[in-house]
Image 1 (cartoon, one colour):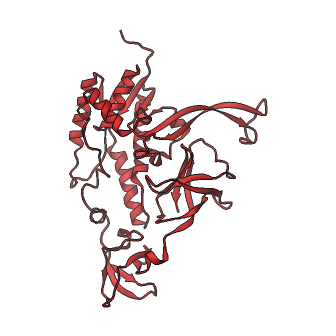
Image 2 (cartoon, rainbow, N blue to C red; image 1 turned 45 degrees about the horizontal axis):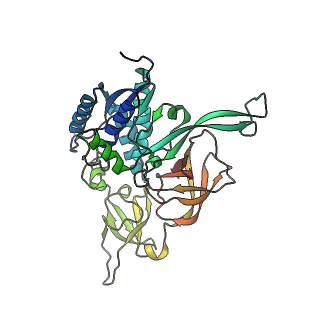
Image 3 (cartoon, rainbow, N blue to C red; image 1 turned 90 degrees about the vertical axis):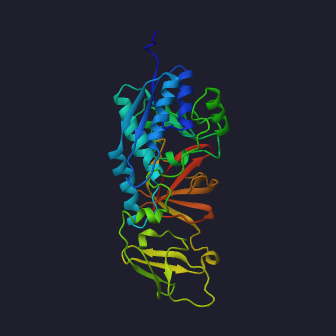
Length: 380
């Protein structure tokens, strides 16, 4: 007999081991589980194994005797992830499509679909954790809220780093809000990857030995520059040295990242030339400036970074008198920092204790207080 009081969970099944084990764990905990395969957009010229992944997701559902559903989010993915990425490169910035995919697709379109179809929760195979805790709040923290007493308790959700330091994916989840977290489960966030594979073998899941997906499916096994050339037309421009003299040419300033040492042509050569590195670029003038002195000058090392499009997961700014930790790249060791609010805008400024290498405009800065992910923003 079906227990009508069981909580219903839609699990995003990618066809991989992490989401497969998530479905098993939830079923064993007594949830009413439905597997959902999300179809996203990809260009026709890129070979992607999504059909095989979908078939694996279907097989997992059959094995677990749970319903299977398809969710087509191709249009949303094209507009909110792919088009965003191309536009960022076009404007000379370095995008983070994984962050946008989580925001717009997994915890945007998928979450809405699940709730609209009667789910109480969604679950994914992310290596992260969510906990509900009781917080003491006061008039000082919320000056526009009226309290009968000077302080009261309120339940809130915190996003925590995954227990597996090598797989922690909280960096890509900094856009989550309280309204989303209350509907999200991360069943494998408390496990390390080897244990997840052990569980997959224990439950005889066909994904137990399946390799993890690498990179973006819509890019495929090609260099990013070669991929971008299909969407951003080549635009020949000048390569400048530090004195502003023309010493070569390139295919388009938007193709190049700071610190890059190849992909452009130097025509003004000498017998003792050293490798050149991109140190500046102008999208407007379509020029890149290169230097031989990148390593000597540590030209991209900086302690102070301005960020925009801030999201604080708790819904409130952290204590700006306190020191926190942050990272500007996935898996980068956490760096000690102070956070400052810009008095003239909604932006924030981060000052690190140590110089940070290659902090590129468009990338994410994500903040932590120990294992708690506070939120983040985009480097200006």
